[in-house]
Amino acid sequence: QVQLVESGGGLVQAGGSLRLSCAVSGRTFSSYAMGWFRQGPGKEREFVAAISRSGGIAYYIDSVKGRFTISRDNAKNTVYLQMNSLQLEDTGVYYCAASAAVFSNWASRVAHDYAYWGQGTQVTVSS
Image 1: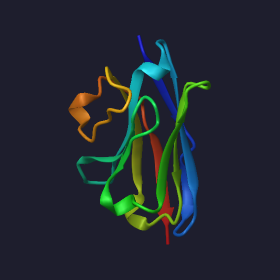
Image 2: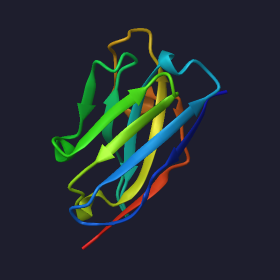
Image 3: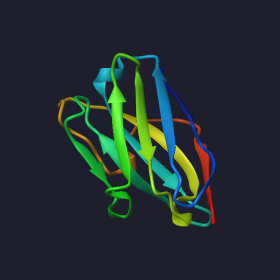
């Protein structure tokens, strides 16, 4: 069984930064492509960022490009989301997700491609 535990959320002022972490246990971390999704108040869950097994491919939703960076440390079984220049619209619960990937340079923006999910961490951006 794969377990994902997010951390690093909190309250931050607009323009500030946070780094989310997602620790993965239970299987070989390097076998999984990883993604970050979020759900804002009254909104549908949406894709934020994804990274391939190798780390060589990364995708972002347009609204976070240039501000967020997804990365992974396969030695630490952890994926990160560095969030800079945070905006009010970034408020929400952030979830990490794992997808068993055959190809090392595959990643997905689609929630249904991810079989394993964390419990989420709250990010609140204040004005």
